[in-house]
Length: 149
View 1 (tube, rainbow, N blue to C red):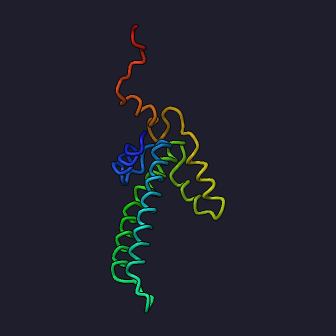
View 2: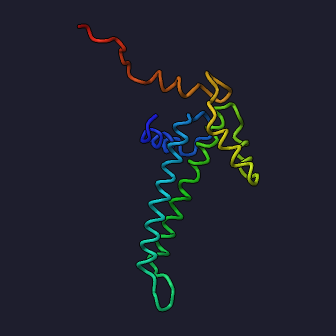
View 3: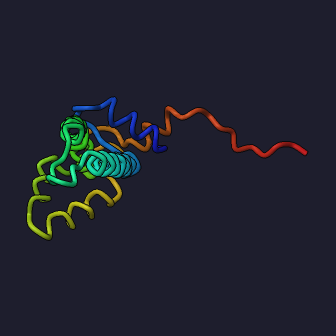
């Protein structure tokens, strides 16, 4: 699954907590979140520096408007992020409630990274068909025959 396909897949399943998600879908989504965070951080820095009043040390209204918009964007990205996390756990035949392990201080995030990076169940499990098989069956046929000389 490519980067654009993964982003489209997550947005098309915006609040879908059922089914399974491949590792590529999950990690490309996190790459997308890192890019969004970098862009919004740079924008906030530029607008904050431009709207700073040096004499009083206060920020202008543009900074607060942009901060509100960035907060709305992150709020809108929260639900699909939780959904893809749960679907990734489903790929390993784990309940979505395993997500709460990430709240355990220190060890929880490490355990969750291991879960997210581990290969999913091969073949169908109680959460649905193997997403690798499902994607392979919808891919266009490519002949692997070498050309005749």
